[in-house]
Length: 555
Image (cartoon, rainbow, N blue to C red; front, side, top):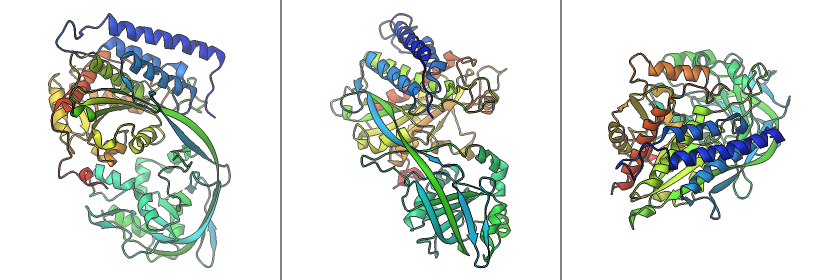
C-alpha cells in the first residue's frame, strides 16, 4: 500500500511548502551573489539549491514514491517554481502537468509454480529458492506449457553480427537464455541489446522466457539478493485504451532460475549446463539448440491503477526560426518511498542525492535562463519526470507522448543524482563520446576550470540507465553529467567519497539533507549544466550523433 499522510503530516507539509517557497523567493530576489543587473554573468545560488533540496528531501514528503501524496506535493512545488519564474506551461490542457496512468502489478502469494517434463519424469522447482518470477501486467492468471529452446544470450544485432536465434524455431515455445551478454560487446551498446531481449523473443513468436542465473552473475549479484526484491511490484504506463506499454502480450510466462537448479532444464539436451558455463568462462558465446523437455509455468497477479505527473515548462526562444526547436532538461522527481525494513529506525528514503539534488539543479538552471538579459535562440524545455525508479517510465511516457514535436527536441541534458559531497575538479559526461554534445560539455566545464574525464566505470553502462535513455532510443542526442572522481582538495579522494555514498547511502534512509552536502560544488555543477544549454541553444547547427556511434543507427 502507498503511504498515507495523517493530519499532523499534512499540517507540516503546508508549513514546509510555504517556507520553502518563501526561501527560494528571497534568495532569487534579494540574496543572489550575482544577478543580471549587477554582473554580466549569471551564477547559480547555493542558498536556492539548499532550499529546494531540503524541501524535496524532507521527511514530510515521505520518499516521493510514484503515485504517493508526497510525490504529488513535490510535483506541485516544482510547478509553482516554474510559474514563479514566468515559464510557460508545457503539460496537458494548458497546465504544467502531464498526468500519467500506471498499472501496478503484484504477484499473488504462493501462486508461482514451475515444472519440467523430460518424457519420463516431472520435476518441480521450488519458489523462490530455485526460481523467481514476477507478476503479469496483462492477465490475472497464466498457465503455460510449451517446449524449451536454448538461445544462448538471446541477442540479435546486425551491427555486431549476432543472431542467437539463427536456425532455431521458437514460435509457440519458451526460450531459455543466459543472463548478461558476450564480453566482447562494448558496455553501452551491449546494455542496449541486453534490454531488448524480450523484444527479440517476442518478435520470433516465443510464449515465455526463462533466464538462467550464472556462476559469473552470482559473483556480482548473488541469487539471494534478487530474492530480497521479489515482492516489488511491476509498474507500466498505460495507453489511452488501457493497455500496458512495452510489455509483450505473447510472452505469457517468465522465470529467473538459479544456476544450480538450471541443470534440470538440460536433462535431455545435447550439452549439459556445465558445458555451457565452461564455454562462457572461456569467452565463447554458446550456440542454441532444442532442450528436448517441456515446461509448465503458472502464476496469478493482482493489478491496481495509480497516477503520477510529469511537470513541464518552456522558456521560449528569441530567434524567429530556432525558437521552434528545444533544448530539453530532465530530472526525475520521484524516489522509492517508505522502506519495509523493520530493522531500521528511520523508514523514509528521502532521496536527497537521488534525486532532489538533480531537481534542485534543474530549478536553479531554469531560474538562470529566466533571469538572463537575453533569451536563448532556441527554446528551453524543462521536464521533471516521474517513475524513474520504476524503470524510467515518466521519461519513456514523455518520449512517446511529447508535448512539443519530438523531432524539434535537439538535445537532452539529463540531471540525475549529482553527488554533491565534495569540491569536484572534473566531471564525467555519459554520452559525450556519441555525439557533438561532447564538445559542448568540454567547453562548458572548461569555463569553470573543470576537466572532462573519461567514464571510470564503463562496465556499468550508465548511459543506458537514466531518463535520457528513452530519448536516445527516439534519436535525440543526450548527455548526462555526474561529478568526477577528482577533488580539488588534495586531502579528499572524490572517488572514495562517491563510492562510500553508494555503499552506505544509495537507496537508503540515510540519503537525506543531513549529509555533508557541498552546495558551493552544486553551484559549479549547475553553472556547467546551464552553460551547456546556452551553447546548444545558441549554436546555429543542432547537435548530431557521431557517424561511428551505435546509437546513431537505432531503429
